[in-house]
Amino acid sequence: MSPDVLAVNEIRARHPERIEERWLTRRRRPLLGEDGRLLLVAADHPARNALGVRDRPIAMSSRSELLDRLLAALAVPGVDGVLGSPDVLDDLLMLGALEDKVAIGSMNRGGLQGAVFEPDDRFTAYDVETIERLGLDGGKALLRVSLDHPGTAATLEATGRAVSRLAGIRRPMMIEPFLARVEDGRLENQLDPDSVVRSIGVASGLGAPSAYTWLKLPVVAEMERVMDATTLPTLLLGGDPHGAPDDTYASWAKALRLPSVRGLVVGRALLYPPDDDVEAAVRTAVGLVRGDVS
Image (cartoon, rainbow, N blue to C red):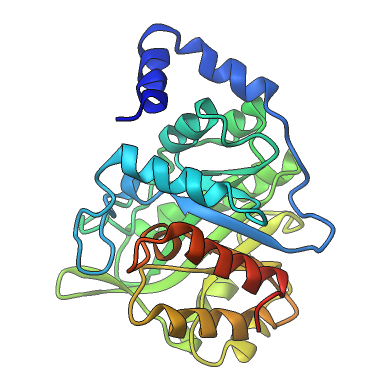
């Protein structure tokens, strides 16, 4: 571990009260800048037992390495902030990486990858009260709508309640919806256009008012038709990277030209690129979001 990461461990052991103190004095910024675009790095995967990247099943197992990659990504000009679970955001806060950055708290991490209860995605991380007290800039919920698993009902109810309560304190909720199906004992997200459209309809109607609801959507075929299913501001989801990075970037670039798409939320594709050049991958994403790369 680096001396800085060891210092975080020392604070956690001897002075845990300093973490909340730092949250309360953090310099905040508006969610959107003047260009109305947003690029967030996602770092909530380990809390859901999702450590794999491409053919590496536990690529994200080293916390010190993950933090180094996050620090490198957040230092690139044009990166607006990070979406993470409480442990990751607290680490980044104590490392000084969240000043003047957007910090979105991941709320439901109970649907562990590979578990029989995966669609029953309990709200086990941030709650609305903590987001408000610490001054986070919003919340995020993963919503797998599995019509063949009863756990979906509880997740829908909890997500709707969180949407309403966040709206009550004027904080955005970023919902990441999927229509999902259990196949061979595994929960598989359905990434055809019709399934994404159906998931948008379900997510958009949760909670009230909908004034502060955002969507995080995968890039799939027929994105123009998919985006016609909603008026909600939308960020594109990077997801678990597959295939050549240039093909991924090209698909992002095309979807980013759609009017209601505001930017990207990308984790593993930027933090663990095939060549391990995090800064270069992030600079490419910045160019796509800010319109500097065609």
